[in-house]
Image 1: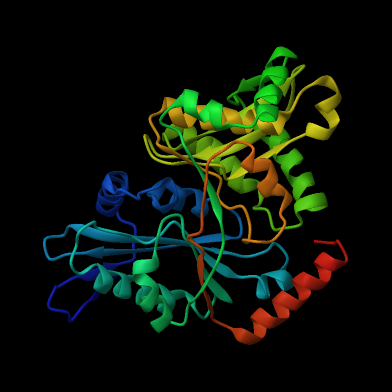
Image 2: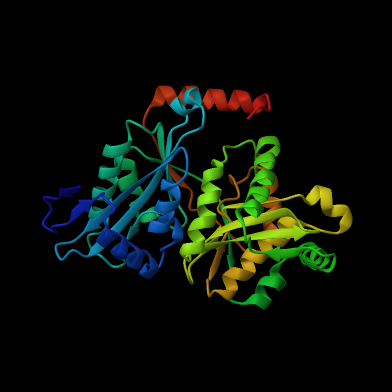
Length: 354
């Protein structure tokens, strides 16, 4: 479907994913300075194949049929019917992407944002832009559309120089990597879906017992495995010890673009006595992969709120890197449902049942 603009710039909005759009979309994201796999057609495919996920795509096209803007979002619900009523949220990872140097960049964003709000605000309780680069130039447009900026910090590692990466890592992390390898742990890429399932089982237990945050359905991890066999947009790095998977990382990326730590886990407490640290080794494998494929950045995808204790941040900071605070832009679409959902989540967290 297309929506025409009355603006003198003659842009139009496209929301259907056609064969031509896919080709233009892939080229646009790969060429964009801030382009990432999380705003690509590959991510759309991943979301489309995941249970309880529903992707939404908006592109802006000029009068010559040239793509000048992309915005990919995903509507996420929880599994049960009752939870789904109070958990539907629209998340945008790393968008929007708008043609660099385009003098109509703000108009383009207004058009794409208006289209997305129109199509999703009745379904999503809230809409959340998780900024992976600086979006401050669009702050006024966000405000005009009911969004509020909230601080969230992230950790980025420059992966251009391998020696520098290792030198900035804490001595304990270096020691844990060496010990893990010397004591028989192996970094492998899975050759069957069963190995990915072992990784997922570890991750699911971690989220249920410690993280206590929603985890995507198994179909998300299954789809990623099969899609990366066909398309080059990331890797699984699993940690194998005595023919058993004891940890791993899911690391999506486009060639020579940012590598993301989307999900990582490991049975570190169980194997520490044997001198093996699977989550540390998995993270290092993905950082090393970023360097080897020509990426300049490894992105940890969030280390919490500034000035608040967060154990995950302490773990990640030992790998080195730089802290940034691009924050998030959030719009509450249904205040009543949002209040009920927030109360319920906080209450269940207090009971340690989430």
